[in-house]
Image (cartoon, rainbow, N blue to C red; front, side, top):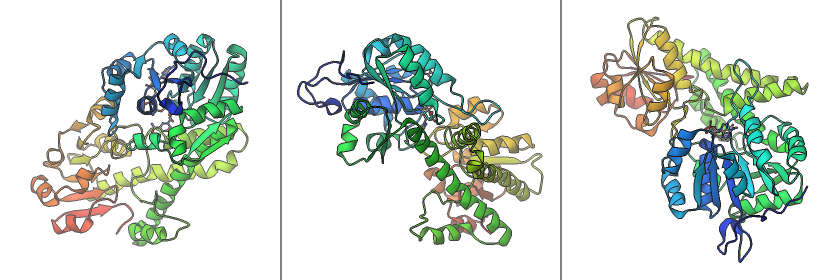
Length: 459
Ligand SMILES: NC(=O)c1ccc[n+]([C@@H]2O[C@H](COP(=O)([O-])OP(=O)(O)OC[C@H]3O[C@@H](n4cnc5c(N)ncnc54)[C@H](O)[C@@H]3O)[C@@H](O)[C@H]2O)c1
């Protein structure tokens, strides 16, 4: 059904959100202010919209309202403060306030993996709909951004039609990368609108007018296609990473060098070099749980065979972690008992403090369980790591983490580690032995400084 997005919205004269003259200015609410939602809220206020961020987590909302980003994302905090100072950006824990305020509501709540299952846990999506829907009495657009299994939007649209007929639902999956979240939100490489009406598409075009006028392509499609674009993109990226990591396994068996191999492959335009970097594999709050949820949904739809390759993609990825532990054990003579191991990196990737399904911490915890004393250092993720892995030791710099170490593991490729001086670190370790889990260090520099340097997929 159609709707009048401007109904109840503030009137403005500036170009906010692409509105001009005396056209009504869209007001946006962002439900769920985690990595995705907080970034979306801040960037939309930067674009000139009036934005209300809403979350059920009081602590998170209090920090955001005080101008503090509860996670690390380069450049986000100054923009948050700017939005708050401008009066265009506010935060609340009240569904009623969000419902009364906005013409467009973005759903950005988490969709983690269910405990003990591959499927996505949609309880936060359903809870947000339960909280918001009864309060939406005037026409508005509800836009899902969370990553959900195909069929979710159709199911929710059925509820919307019955419980809040003035409301229309759309799905607009998000592709931002942590560490580049602002650029990716302000200038996305594509916009996908899962819509059921021209009016819904028109409203989304107004919200994203700035990116669209700068050339961002828009794909408008049905709900299921929009939902699938997101998980298909993540499945492809995960497959590319696991492909090169599978080649790394073969390289290890043949004495070949996966870095030279991937470089040679990358010169083929049809293959390209991105996401073709062998190492410890992927982690984080998206790729692992998204490919598993995709497999689970395919099973429900009776097309599990179509995605059976993703099981192998996942298995290759997890085997890299096991291989890293084996290689580390080999270097310390087979047993971790009584060994001191330094782990450089805790976040699942550099430029983030996100430790969800972090390969680095997974490896660190396994080695600690097998008897080593483990000292971890990460430039940004220490606070989160300490809470989730209290059994590990933590140090406040790389030099202090490697002090007295029998083995150093480089597990998250922060620039700080790439630029570290192997001679200086070599002065304080017990043994100059390093495994480069990210194939990111300059092997010749480390070897020249007297280190035994080993890496995944390389001789
Ligand atoms: N983080 C990313 O880089 C990224 C990128 C693209 C897509 N996504 C997708 O976006 C979604 C959110 O991911 P995230 O990383 O921001 O997760 P997150 O865990 O950082 O944030 C989710 C937020 O939702 C809040 N929430 C939970 N239930 C709620 C409710 N009923 N009402 C209001 N708020 C509620 C939580 O308190 C939390 O602040 C997921 O589906 C994820 O797959 C994330």
